[in-house]
Image (cartoon, rainbow, N blue to C red):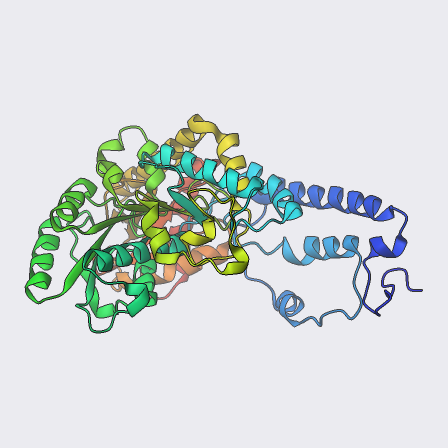
Length: 495
Ligand SMILES: *Cc1c(COP(=O)(O)O)cnc(C)c1O
């Protein structure tokens, strides 16, 4: 009998453990577990010594996407060796202190350490009486308390990310608006009713538009509210757009403000938006996926005044907090609104012990839900409130320092004020035309050099560079490296 792939009574393949039948699986697993832990530590400890990012070589791509599935099962030890040689050497780069791209953080080590434990328990956190759902209620409350969002019991749930959190919040808003008008969007669909209108700025995240599409609102009923010179929502324009839409017989139902845009980290005037929402009975959603935590930075609180008046808040523990991907969170002032939009309990899932709040699966589209709470709990517990504040202060400080360096340098230009931990800027050279083309080409050239990683965007109609700071180990010395890397990269690209 082949030791690694014995046949069971029905001809099905047995695992090594069952085949051995003498408890040796425990020893195999112990050795492999220790090895996995060692590989993980080796990887994390060495991140800073390797290039931030490099393209995946052709033969490695072939290995990754071209292999045949093995006919017979392979030993744990071999799989770990393969992961060590073919997977871990090809990171996206976001573990490195000089990764400044998009909004992707390094993983908090406490979050990494408990991931295998969550997988070992492998519950579905749809609901029920086990550790997962109970811990989820606890960490959702922690997150709400951390950013100052009013938290009634059970007022939120963890999601795959803020995109899904946004779908949940806007679905709740849509159903609440329909019910307020005396009909039921779930029952009837939207046809024949006045179109519902959503208001977001041009700096609003694409996930708001995707949610609007999924919810059947239609792109043409997502209004783009103009922004001011600091890329914040122009609330006077919002007012007049709502008035026009009411005049035209449409149904304004929701305004989404940003607590930290991706392009420049701008925070909309949330208090003023809350006033408008209250006047018109609109649902006030805040996209704090990246930036909600910024409220913890010293002196930042006034920018966030009004956040506590939101009906819903999307925030991403897998962004600034560094909870391993993926973990988003939808917080709702009235969680019953999400339940009204999603609850559908088939007979085989009726749980007489569920209590007043029911199951998490009643508050969103996911049924089987992973144990996201454990890594979130571990990360928050490891940092503590003061550690989170320290991280936020350190990274917002880096963004301000880079802005000051950019303003002092003749060959750089600052494009937006710094409110959170993102610096939006631009490279310029007196002698050179085509600055848009140049700035568009720079991020790729910087990335390829491997010493730093930044990404670009369009801001106010111009090509921009943006650096987002989320890593606790980034230093001011790294900022100087970044600017030098941009200068060197600029020499290599032809606009
Ligand atoms: C990342 C992000 C999102 C989308 O969240 P995912 O977790 O990627 O689904 C939305 N808004 C902002 C501001 C973000 O930074």
